[in-house]
Length: 272
Image (cartoon, rainbow, N blue to C red; front, side, top):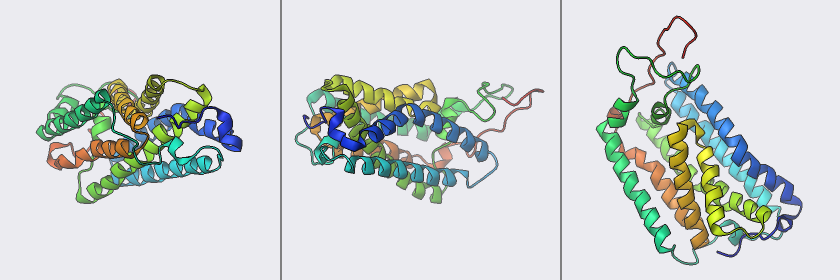
């Protein structure tokens, strides 16, 4: 792929706005995500509509941010659609990237089998007579923080389907199409390997609420998505793969998931 902006001057008057949005994706999104998920975990204990409300909030935030990035790009006169991935693929990915994408699909299917077995639910549930790790007033172990997001009821599953598709479209546009165009313009001729690494780090940090393991896992996924994008010149394959990875959770029955987060244990001091 050779259509990435060569310098920030290509963005014209929109250059400053593009950089601000790019900085937010790296530094602001992890903080916002952490705060939103802590509040969500707290509400989930007592509010049966908390998960649906959180899904709706995610939809508003992601589409709103995606729209903002779109407006900034449209205001950049010298950055065409191909430079931000809004084009058909110019060719297949290389063998290494293609194999990595296939491995992602295989591991996604394996994770579905693990979740269906209830193994992760048991691993993330404190045993009787033990206290959960102290991670803040509403924070849960990373496994619970992730499992808490998964839909249980039929209405939650319908809304989660929209969330999964939205993540594939909006996050690929934001973190691969828009963000990498800004990074390429600021860096000036960065090699693809560097762009893949930057995309991986930014995407991993955006999922900091999932703990270190979640950051590493989503960072690797972000790197694969970025490589697919850069090698094909299009966001199409990353969008499809990203949506498939998220929507795989619809294959997990609600009976294999905890109904709600466990209530905090009384310890005689401040809640853990």
